[in-house]
Length: 517
Image (spheres, rainbow, N blue to C red):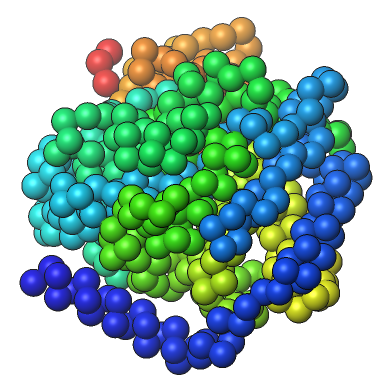
């Protein structure tokens, strides 16, 4: 029955391709002369982006017809230091980890260890969603396609306050769904993480070891890992950079181990080029079928609509850990990665031409990876760049945080004059809790309050009085000027019965009740 479903997916996919992009559109060969000219201009564009300060450093790999035809680093690993980026500089690749992890699961599927339609309830019986029916029917495919109903940020908030992977996955059962099961697309780091972790369970090995055995080691990806401890051991690694007063600064580090399958891979342009060879070769690497072509093809079936590409306008879908797009140059597979604390990455594959490009950058926000990829595609397919793609994509990424920060600042820009006084600190002090976030402890701290969250109070936040029982804090290191409200409900007994933590309330779980005396 499940084999029939797989064939149905592939048949629908083939029909979509033929309808939108007939073979004449997406199978034209690329001449050696066109490729040589495109690579030369790509190199110049990358060098200019670094020279103009668009990013501190870049590494790029290009694969065509199973050969790595371009491999080079640009700029510096860390601003203010002399070490240069090269093809072997290790970057944290953020959500570019998703298609890498989908390839690992495809290897497990091809080996018969699991199916894309294996039920999570069979693989990991302890895992729960909020409702029993989706829990019983949930598959690896659902989680890699982001159609489980989990809200996109579910679990990210727990990671931010210090919880580990096991704790986060267990607590997802308390998150109300954002859509009906399989009815909506909601990009979920910890949903995909559960899919990968569950797929690894029958091997008896942790995900990180499975990824190494099934993909990194067979492809000779010696500098690639799904463990942050391995990343920090590399001397030749890229720092994360964010803008401060108009200049790139390496100020924040990121340990993504909790969501390793979704965002925790670290790698190099050289290593990822070998992975692109495997992908463009339909699972064949160095003449050997390492991964079943059918298992790998499942990852590129367009399952969930994502709307239009915000810059190029192409129709975009999500498969299993991959974006599937029908754009101005035909069919492409791809995925972007970003850490708001300072990383940007991208892979783009044109499967019919067996062409792929991977771009790693050590800064955020920036649209340089997409800009370079789109420019390169124009050069390869058309011989000329249609528009300034870097500028267009920079505008997209610049708008990601700016409006959010400004709206948050505007909300608290004009405090009441005079503000209503706070209750005594003793009214707010105490322990609060809910099932999802666990404990929150509030104590007096000078003229304000101190809020501790996470396991053993792992994260601390200073609270400054704003008005009555409303306080402000600044929780985000990457947006240090964005305020968030923290409010209390104080009863006639002059004791707060509840606290609502604004920066943890995206999924309406940010209210915690007082416990104990």
